[in-house]
Amino acid sequence: MDFFDEISKAKKDLPKGKAVRDEFQKYRFNFYQIFAIVLFVVLFFLGIFLGNLFATCKASTYFYSDECLVTEFNFAVMIMVWFIGALISLFIFAIGHIIEILRNIDEKLSKFRL
Image (cartoon, rainbow, N blue to C red; front, top):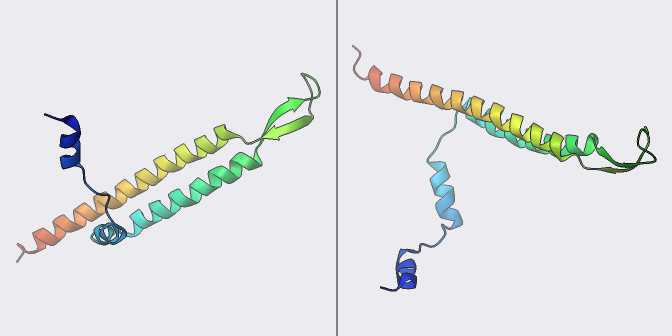
């Protein structure tokens, strides 16, 4: 039994662009889900912007100085905004998903109503 032959048999090609597009067209997102995706993208770029805006001081003239000689990008602020943005976006997306599930249940139950 050759391990590399087993890998060759089990290997699949990556999906092409049209197959990925067709897969995503199956799903219909409601307003909350679209809002969550847009909010995540906005907060992603906002994290980069705020990381640059609130730069950290790398070197100062002396230990207790108010002057910065060199400033650098603040990764902590960026990661914090990304994390909070991801949590908020996932929460809103989950609410949208729950609403979609309840709507599907209502459609199925409406067939049995008189």
